[in-house]
Image 1 (cartoon, rainbow, N blue to C red):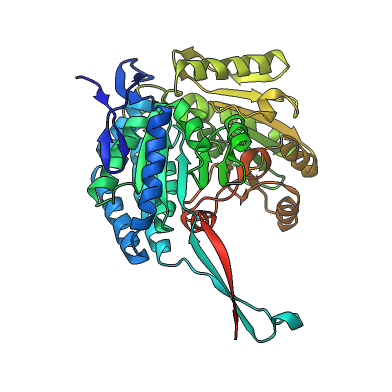
Image 2: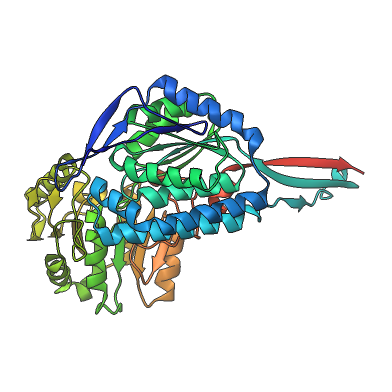
Length: 471
C-alpha cells in the first residue's frame, strides 16, 4: 500500500506542500506517511488565512454545536485514527483507542464552555473617584492562535488546543509533530466535515514550520506543548505575545510512612512504564519512607518485568516503542550512566531498535542526572527517605514543577506538601500520572506557564477588557 501523502489545510483548501519527508513506523520500519515540510511562505499563507477568518467566527451557541458535531465524528472514526496513531508513534493500540475516545470528551467539554464565557461587574466605589460609576470586565477572543502539539498524546493534546480556541471565538494555525502528522490530518478532516468555515483552522507541518509560525507577527497567542529547550527558543522570539507553555517534568511520587503499599507498587510500576514512559507526568522518581522501603523496589521491578513489551498493534501489548530509535538509545544511555554513577539496577532495560524494556534503579543520588532531568522513557528510580521534608527539597531542586504524587494518611503532611512543593498539581493518594480533562493542568518553573483544560484554556485564549460607564 502506498503511504499517504498528507496535505496542508489552508483557508479551507487542501494543499500539497512543495517538500515532504517520510515518517517511519518505529516498530516495523515501514513508511507510514509522507509528511509536509511547510515553507515560510506556506506558513505565512496559513496565518494570513486565519487572520482573514476572524471576521467569520460564529456566535457561541453555533460554536458549541459545531464542536459537538466534531466530537461525534471523532467517536465514529475512533478505530481509524487510533490505528494511524499506533503506526506513527508506536503507542499500544489500546492506549491509542483510549486517547481518541478521551479526545471526543475533551471537545464536548469545550463545547459546554463555549456558552459560559463571562466577564464580571467590578466594584468601583472603593475610592471617591469611582463613586457613581459602573465598571464591567468583558472577555473577547485573543485572535490567531498558534497551536504546536507533540507526538506523545497527539489527538487529545490537539483537542485541548483546538477545542478551547474555537470555543473562545479564535482562529487557529495548528502545527503537529512530524512524528504524529497522519492522525492529526485525520482529525483536521473531521473538523472540515463538521462544517468548518475556511480559515478558522489551518494546518502546517514540519520542524521548521514551528519556528516560522511563532515568528509570524500575525499570530496573537502561542499554545505550545513540548520540551523546555524548545520553549526557550519560542520565548526568545515571542515578544509581548501571550503564551501557554506545557513542558516537561520528572514525575515525583512520594510514599510516606503509614501509607498502605499493597497497591502502590503496581501503580507506580504501571504509571512509569505506560506509553514507554513518554509522558511528562510519568512516574520517574519514587521516594519511599525507610519504614516501607524494604521490598518496595523489588515489587516495582517484579511488576515492570511482567509487563508485555511488543508489537503495538497487538491488543495484549502494554509497552510499545519509543518514538524512534534515537530516543530509545538516549534513554538507554541515561540508565547506563546512572548505574555507572552508583545506582543499583534491579531491572535493566534492553533495547531493540526503538523498543526498550523497563529499567528499575535503586538508590541513585537525589541530585543525580537520572533523578533531576526528564527521562521520557521506561525508567523509574526508587529512593529511600527518613524525613519527608527532605523529599520536598529534592522535588523543588530540579526546577520542574508539573505534578507530584503523595501517598500519606497524614493531613499534616498533605497540607505541608501543598504549602511547600512548587508544583502545578499535587495528587494525594495517587501518583503523578493522573489527569482528567476538565481540570486545570500545567506547571511552574521548567514545567511551563498557563493552564489547559477547556475552561482554563479559554481564559488564557481570551483577553479581558475594562469598560467604565460614567452614570
